[in-house]
Amino acid sequence: MEFRDLKKQYQTLKGDIDQAMANVATSGAFIMGSPVKELEQELASYVGVKHCLACANGTDALTLALKALGIGKGDAVFVPDFTFFATAEVVALEGATPVFVDVDPRTFNIDPKSLDDAVRSVHDLMTLRPKAVIAVDLFGQPANYPELRAITKREGMYLIEDGAQGFGGSIRLPKPSGEGFIVKRACSFGDISTTSFFPAKPLGCYGDGGAVFTDNDEWAALIESYRVHGKGSYKYDNVRIGLNSRLDTLQAAILQVKFKAFKEHELADVNNAAAYYTQLIEGMTKFLNKEVQVTPPYVPEGYTSSWAQYTIQLSVPSGNGTFNREALQAKLKANGIPSMVYYPTPMSAQTAFKEYHNFALTPQAERLSKCVLSLPMHPYLTREDVKKVVQTLVVSL
Image (cartoon, rainbow, N blue to C red; front, side, top):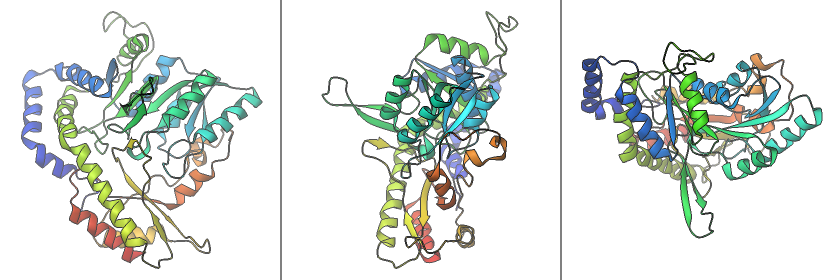
């Protein structure tokens, strides 16, 4: 069993992917060929924003967003403490200060209450300017953007959406008129939003890739310049210090094929697999007298996840013992079932950030790092696969 079965996906889409790669090879336009612009237009339309600018990877996408907003030394950028390293790494690289915020124990996403506390702490110290929040759509589920937007609007901060894992997720929101609802998709919630096309992401290419989304014309023009060495009117007119961060034509062509499948069935299929996981876990564990309790992922009403990961929590309800996560993973592996831990260390505890001041406590991030476990999840996962995973999990506890 594969953790994320890219081989099966390729076999399913092989004809179209092979043809797309052959077309690029025939054209000879390997850098910024027509599939790049076509993909950008397709993604912008799907997300519901004016501009999509493709780039070399998801980390660069965040860097480009920060550069467009002019974030740098003296600025405080609030980030969740439970996520991948890049979210805070890019802040530090721009000379700004990452401020770590606790997460919601059910959704794993940045907690608005903890964010409020961290903002007040920064105000009290008066050494940094609260400038932006980077909210991560962890494991495929959008963060609590209605509450986050209220805070950033009140504080005059930018809201950046790190949708590296969240592409395809959505939130059903009330219409401004109060009558009916609209569905907003991930990568449209921030003033600037970003995503990653790393192969294992919900929409992944065959290498590295990323994109930035915004409705702001000025920021889009800046990002267009920054991603090609700070170019001006043409490639040898350099008006600012930038990056070499373009999406290869070959990757764009592959993404066009995979995006079609993503819209037609993959997003629905992965949600069906997740629903079956949750049904079996709740049914199989509630009647078993096990020392270790298994909690499936929680999706709030009106939210849709794209399930970059299916992450359970393992806990000892009595509080009188601990479980051996590594031993459980070994048992799963012995039965041909891969598993992963995302993430074993909170960001504030990473060696690279040891010199940074902690403005707020993050107990949930610390707890989650010790109890989460991600199970195989992808659109080509069969019901038999899901049943095998859950049955093996239950008897292995």
